[in-house]
Amino acid sequence: MSLPLEGLSAIVTGAGRGLGRAEALELARLGAAVVVNDYGQPGRDGSGAASAAPAEEVAAEIRRAGGRAVAHLGDIADFETARALIDLAVAEFGKLDVLVNNAGILRDRMVFSMSEEEWDSVIRVHLKGHFNTTHFAAVHWRTRAKAGEAGVYGRIVNTSSEAFLAGSAGQPNYAAAKGGIVGLTTSTALALARYGVTANAICPRARTRMTEDVFAGFAEPTAEGDLDPLSPEHVAPLVGYLASPAAAGVNGQLLVVHGGMVAIVDRPRVAAKFDTAKEAFTYEELDGLLTPHYASRPAGETFAASEVLGLKKG
Image (cartoon, rainbow, N blue to C red; front, side, top):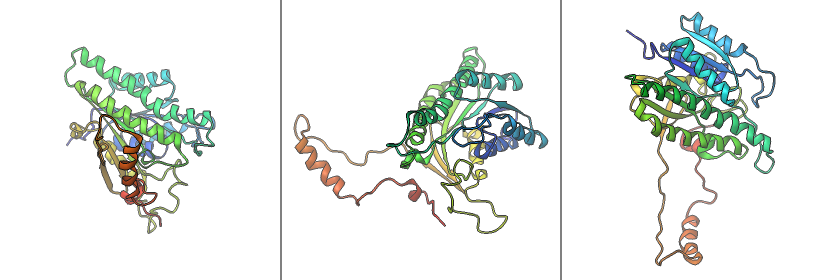
């Protein structure tokens, strides 16, 4: 019996460690040939010297297991590097079928303390990085379709975050970038559907180098040898599914995933609606409508995805 991704090729960015590594290994396990991209910097804030070692180690692990993989050292926030990454997949495997955007950095600070550089660097790696690879992958698929190739296959899986859904006080740059990724995903999904391409985004919870302090004390293994409920291995199967032919009908979606749970996030819905009694609203009328509405809600109530989706400490 053939594997779900047999004959397909994939790129995973930021795949030298953590979540990206787990995703690359899962895609390979399902039969895909994988380009393992990573810039290899040791600091989760993007600091330190670039190194090919993390990507090469993951690619070697895939090959030892009988799969096909090549490593790519590069900063995907650089436009030409992203072009070269897509070109590498085509040169090595004949075409590109799956793009998983995962690479990112953290530079946390409260909004009143954040520097311009801290803002720009996170937006650059996350949001611009997602755009760069998406752009060149989209050009690749559209060119093939325009040339008359039948059955063009394309899957994009982007990485957003619950920091976008619920807010994160010390991460205005990260939350903004992750929100932007959702917008990029839905726009891409609409633009590329005609070419046989889908684009979806996930909000993963995983204990990695980037999040180890965030999830310290949360949902830890109860016994030695148990799989960590926040292990990246809980996230990777969803990426494999979204990359597969089985997910042909899934497009423009946002899914939260962690520890044996997948939640499909609806588009924003209208919670309440008010119409003016006159030709246009006045301040007084809005005060009379909106102030009582918000006063009826519990003090300090906000949308807390961590509560809604069951993240508990201890």
